[in-house]
Amino acid sequence: MICARCDKPIREDEDREKVINHGASGAGSTLYVHTRPCEAPPRQSYLSRRLRR
Ligand SMILES: [Zn+2]
Image (cartoon, rainbow, N blue to C red; front, side):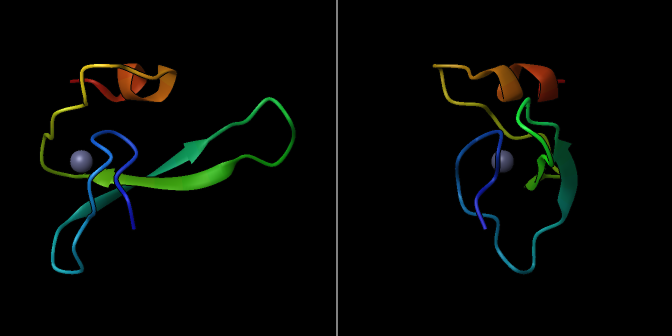
């Protein structure tokens, strides 16, 4: 799976955090991010700003 914050793959043996993305159009989707603090890419999406620590 792909990390929603840094856009890099999360490996099977890495800790991940589940994030519910409440979309404006209904059900929303489940995303994952690294549990370790990872760097968001320079162009920041709305989601990566929210997840910034
Ligand atoms: Zn990440």
